[in-house]
Image (cartoon, rainbow, N blue to C red):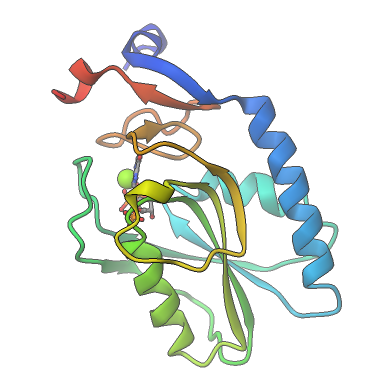
Length: 184
Ligand SMILES: O=P(O)(O)OC[C@H]1O[C@H](OP(=O)(O)OP(=O)(O)O)[C@H](O)[C@@H]1O
Ligand code: HPA
Ligand SMILES: [Mg+2]
């Protein structure tokens, strides 16, 4: 896809690159304070969380190992199937570890509610969530999120890791697509 096409497909920018950076500064400062003196393992959820993980983790004033899981509930569409599949599991044993799941978005909440249950059942000392975006009105299950970047409306968003059919992840901001793009 051409960069020009990417621009033409956009409806509006919801969160700018600068706003994301400032918010991540605040979230990182809180994480630093909350986990001071504790072991901390960051668990990123592929693929959407790669940008949040990279930009949040390098704002921490401590060393924090990271591991990754890949789960998929969306496939190539704009609706969660509700069925979460593990595509790649952790490399790390998380028994007695303080785990912070790093995510791009909580939409229906189905992915994270399943993931928190899955990781807790492995004997982690604690399991918390840091998510850049949350759609409060789209929640199908309540998820207890310790660190949230922005609450956004119930609209399909792309950019900063978020895709539509694998496109647009590399936009540096969060935007919405024109309905024609996904046949809406
Ligand atoms: O709250 P939910 O409704 O469950 O939606 C949130 C999840 O959906 C997206 O992942 P996706 O399955 O699209 O995989 P991806 O990160 O590889 O795009 C997103 O990255 C979250 O993991
Ligand atoms: O709004 C969204 N955009 C992209 N991927 C997603 N996965 C859940 N919600 C979204
Ligand atoms: Mg996706």
